[in-house]
Length: 164
Image 1 (cartoon, rainbow, N blue to C red):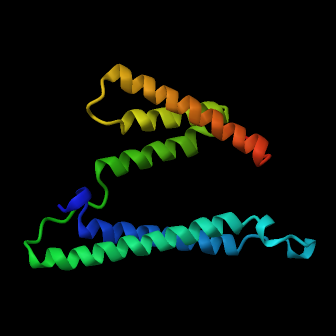
Image 2: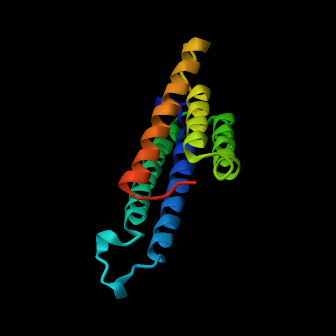
Image 3: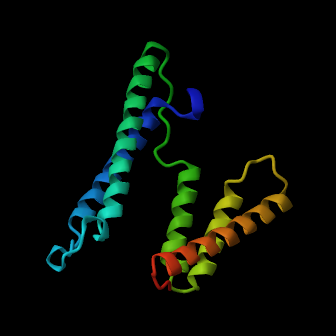
């Protein structure tokens, strides 16, 4: 293991994953309707913000891959360690929570409640290990409530999006 608790291999794999995900977002945003026939400006087009986010993910994925490549050269001089698993427990838990939120909670519960539960579960699961159980639960519930309120307000009153 090297600084930050990551290996060169995980940086390369993670960077490749983020690069691919960013490219998929860029392709998807390019294929979205641009409403040019209606006189829409660039900033009002639905794919503009996703394209920016996809571009940032591509750049950060490339930076992570470059970091992994340079670390790999330095690690090659030393002893090679065992390969890190592609799917560890934290990644599996993150995927499970995210899928639970997107597939089960959204649409069956009000958006604000589903989001509050998701954020609270995520914060409780990944809180620093030194915290007591009561403190962890209070902070998780507080983070869930605040995040849910802010996200709901922004989507409904800034973006004018009706939430489920």
